[in-house]
Length: 408
Image (cartoon, rainbow, N blue to C red; front, side, top):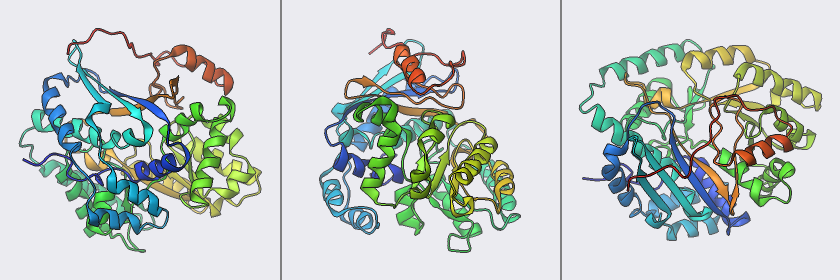
């Protein structure tokens, strides 16, 4: 039986764009990632052997010549990086799975950033699909298809609203994501006049002739906390290194690694003009959009020439609300994830695999949404808040106990 992940392209585009930057800018960086299931009461330990076997099969994959040719055809992908991918395989020695006494699981990824960055998306997709094929065997897809058609009907009522699929990591299954994309492509269109702009999933972009979407993720700016010359300047350092790598391409800056206030302090007139726009992934999206417009205006940039991308827990009704709020004032785009690829009735799992360390130093994201902050060193988190002049955390933020007893 083939594994859940059948191609190394079955991941988000920003993994490749960050990986290329790592190859050229930080090839010696060493990192650690930590898994967390934010859904309360979910026990994954019973499926540990199945998850481990799927990861074993993942680590046997390599890029095919057709896949390498597809990557080589992207204007921002460089030939030496494609040559590197031609030699690349994920190594199982860098990932460790442990069953915990409470029925949860611990997954750690440790090793060179260049050789571990590709674990995140397929591992999360594996955990999600293994869980649902065990807890929802033979699930009738009728309800999922009905919900998808409801979303399509709403979309068609707002002809200038466009969305992209960002749902690989928490999908119900590989085949369901494929069906969703094929249905959206057929009903909404993907050309210049279509309402589906593309997908973050590189495999489906190649298979279905869609545009692959994505730039940077939180881990890139988090790693810069350890890689830059000074912690306070790590965000500026990350943006400058990105611009050095892509020379104006892939110009969407991620805004919520240190909160919106810190982002706006660092995102000065130079970056306002250099980058095409910014992406929202935590906090109130309406307030965030208004502040971005005000910030562009204060820096003598016409907001209508820039784009803001929303990607935090979106539904189609929320996309419509945001679209109507900002229409004509600034360009807006929407990356819809779990609500597209895992909305069949049972609750989707809230799974993450976050970088927590780089070059032996703790790294962290300080989210504008309570509960999203993930860190193992509370002292470092307090220091990070002090450096970026951030308020005290809400009581929902809790450290991870590295010394918790485990059951091998």
